Length: 100
Image 1: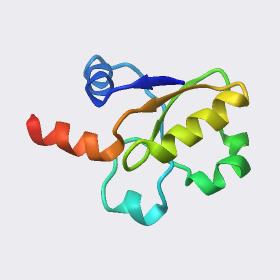
Image 2: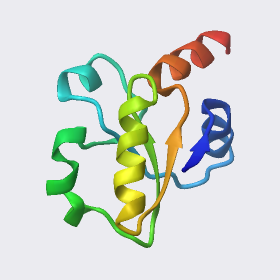
Image 3: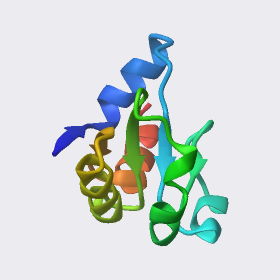
């Protein structure tokens, strides 16, 4: 499974790279705070929303701590998607944001 750190995501954003971030947390969790521009597809709905994703785009999966996004990464990878798990999830994102 491919992984990316929060710092690497932030560098890519700073460099203007187009990123396709999917947050697999529940809607209420996302409403409490999220990365700008994410797509919210709760983990339990991912299999039903595959038609919304493009196998030609690389995706970065996000959740609270990295567990659910890891499951989503494995699920999508098994179906031929180019997908990477953001290690540490939003907990790491919030910590990184506090440091800057």
